[in-house]
Image (cartoon, rainbow, N blue to C red; front, top):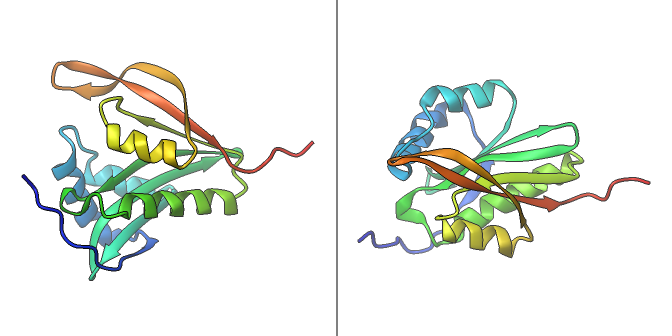
Length: 159
């Protein structure tokens, strides 16, 4: 069993290229089918809103947000397994929501595995609602796993 580490102040900041190795390491330790180093690099190059949460100089979590045509899509949000349940995921999600509002986003979307109950609880706490399912969306050991699609209205549409 992993013992959580005590709460120590942390802050979020923009992800930079030098963070990609740490981010990729957290991704590999968190998922059976992780994103590659190259995917994170490409997200930075594409200008996505990529952020990290840093604690005592070490990256302990990250997020990737795509914004286009007034909508946003949370592509990835992950906290190092050793630092979960300390509020860092909520901090990153708050950062994402703030960035989306600043950029005039009307609605934000995400997919999550239905088996990820803690992530779903966080999204519900922050006002997301389940709007659909995508069949066979995620790779899984025994084939494919569905995705629950969530959304949240941010800025009011004019008119």
